View 1 (cartoon, helix red, strand yellow):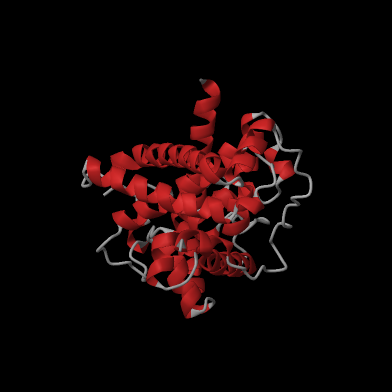
View 2 (cartoon, chains in turn blue, brown; view 1 turned 60 degrees about the horizontal axis):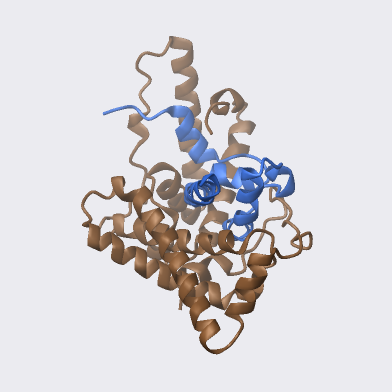
Length: 77
Length: 237
């Protein structure tokens, strides 16, 4: 069996260790955050704590990645 | 009624520390023409409204199918028609959520980006639950023995042993039983948060707050024990 990476495992156990929003604020702000990212804006400054939440919450991170891929793909057309 | 979205919008107690301030929504720019057009049509009556809802449903189906396609490699046991049924159900649920929450749209993004997130969420939650259907949700630690120290230098091995020992002790002694179950299931055993929320009859937001509080306690305990976390975590995320 492959050994899991200890640093990644510790990251999952201990979380981002900085101020973060919760899942519901993340969902509220996700569309704005993704558009700012795609436009090259400073999404992290505009919505403090969302990046930390994405680092700590795999489900929200997956939804962020999907929205970014979907909207980014449309913009590329 | 859409349980997924309700779970997300339920009020959640915010800790006063280590929580980012709630972002302001008062800075939203004026609506763009396309977004205004969507809102006008969806708030109209008769054929114009029906047509707008049909167009909106089409967008949501597209987004839900996009999510299904992204996750398909991880779901080899599901047939194509089963996956498309999940996408259509997700789009239907997302449509209900969007129409119910239309007044929440403030133009902070394009309307289409705003609605896509509902379909992606519904599809992702359904697929995570489907992937765990019939599986036991492990609430006890299963993985400690996997952190092998094989190949480490003696100093590093001793440091890792001390870190893991302190961490295991903190999990056993500092956390409440509920915090321990949630942390172990989510962070150690990889149970998706929606799946655990359903099994424990709670919400995603409430579970994440429990996880957040548990993580804070563990960090504090490790710091009190004089263990430097930065060197262990610098490449973690």
